[in-house]
Each structure stands twice: as structure tokens, then as C-alpha cells.
Amino acid sequence: MNSRPTNAEGSTTLSYYLEYVVSRDPDEGHFEFPVSEEQRGYTVPLSETDADVISTDSLPVRTEVFGASLAEAKEAAESILSNSKADQARLFDDPDDSMQPGSGTFIAVYTKSDGWQDHE
Image (cartoon, rainbow, N blue to C red; front, top):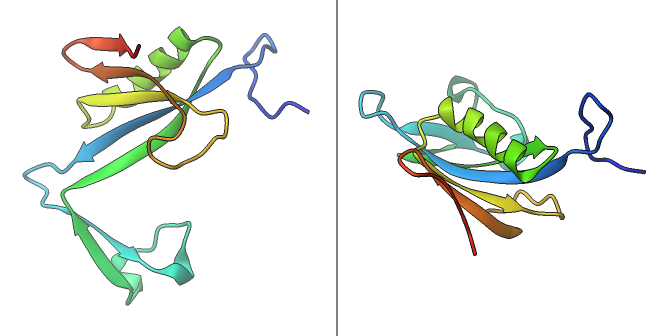
């Protein structure tokens, strides 16, 4: 059984993982979020928990992107990045579908100034 998504034509799409860092906006201060082993896996408003609070200036992101080809996956990644504060990112092929940073084969790097540069 194939668990990969399909496109409108029914062809299997490829999945890649995009990693980037969201930096804080100088006008917004820093990011704060609770850390609680009891409430893992979903967001808990700070006002509703007495868990320890972590404060940071940046948030690492690893998200899955899909495409019928590497080029389509890069387009999807650019769409995500255009709506983020990130100015650079890395793309990985990870057949294990891990959410661990750096997992899989490093494919390419993206910068807003230079676009995609394939890793050799």
C-alpha cells in the first residue's frame, strides 16, 4: 500500500523536507512557549499552564513539501518561504520521513538573493 500523496492525475508525488529558521521581528520581542511533557503535541496558551516557559529569538522549522518532481517540490518550498520571515532554507530528501533536523540527504540550499543551489 502506497502512503504517498497523489496529484490530480493520480501520480504519486515525492516528499521532501524543508528546514529554515524563523527569526523574531525586532518590534515583536521574542518567542515564548511552554514546555510540558504532560501536554506534548499541541499548543497551550501561556495563560493556561504553569509549565516552564522557554524564551527564544528564533524558531527552527522542518516541514514536509510535496511535488511530482524535485522542481515542483522546490516551487512548493518557495511558496512556504515567501510567507515566512526566513531568508534561507535547506531541502532534504528523507525516505524515513523523520522530523529530526538534518535527517535525510541534503539536496539544495535556498537564499532569497540567489534562489536554489543544488548540493553536490
